[in-house]
Length: 218
Image 1 (spheres, helix red, strand yellow):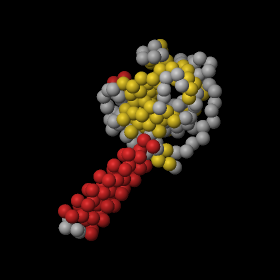
Image 2 (tube, one colour):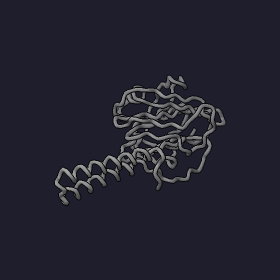
Image 3 (cartoon, helix red, strand yellow):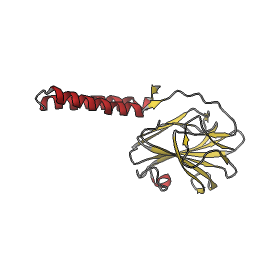
Image 4 (cartoon, one colour):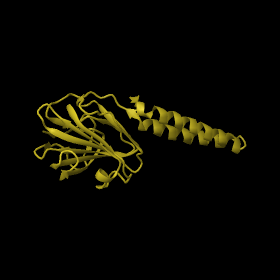
């Protein structure tokens, strides 16, 4: 297990902040050993929670043409037919994965292909489990086209705790299935928009693992 590069600054800042807080507790408690030890213990646990959030597991993805893999760890909260008006501009199947703060928050490309569209939208920070979060929250939309011409959209959606979406996708670049697509800090959701004839391989409330679980067969 490694730490994701997006977490380096946050981990360092949180360590410094907690160290300053503990120094303050030490002097304000008249250098009480018991109070200082309790403060240190609680701070260490909190810091480990922050470090754990930015974990980046080393996973091997066997690239499979025609498949769409899970772009994130989490729980499937939506499987339905919807209109995708931003770039596909047609009716398609939506599969959404909700990530809690305890999940790995690295995002991966769900299939290989060429990035045809990338756009970041500023927005609200409602709970990522709410349906409106897909269109009203801060989000980044990425359109990928595979070598057969089939297109899918993957959308990173910020949640109530999230304040930064990182996306590495760039227009007109080739990406590999299972390569890192980005990171969302502190609670979020990933939406997939697939062709209507896609064969969905997951069920509602199913736990999925990024790069490992097959979401659909195109």
